[in-house]
Image (tube, rainbow, N blue to C red):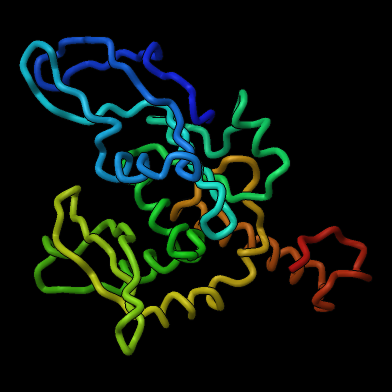
Length: 250
């Protein structure tokens, strides 16, 4: 995004979820917080997506295709928000694509504003979002309570506490989209997931891909199939160099 670029004439339409009124909305399709740091808070607060219905006065958030780019933090990252996108991998078109072709930066696809915010927090904290998704899966699967209504079904990373004697990872916990509170877990569990998840970290995320619990489950299934094929072929060489079969190398 050019620092001087004018988005005042870029519009999209939004439909009020309360009264059904459709209106035009001026949008900002991309931000580069390296050039314009103030935009980071506007994204995280939701201000950049806020709209007010001209008819009934309802205030809400409008999701539209949007690119968030940070060229410096932890090697740089780009997050593409495309609401209701059914694809798992998308290409980035236009000027932004030209800019990132020569950069080795992390690119992710998300479909909601909350996912966008979480990815920003994850990459700013220097964490691997793939490992974090496995962490969340394992944490959720181990939660048991007599009060089933208060067992979270979704966790959203919010930050790390570096000052504690034991480093902590914080998540916002939800149950059927209802906020339950903050969950605090030891950072050591995240570190153990780095080992637990091997060798699925060898699978690359190509172009602008979705990384979530589905990504983890699909990679685990691929790895199970690969291991089964090796066993069926009688291959125990570890590197598959002499068995005559083409395998995924760890």
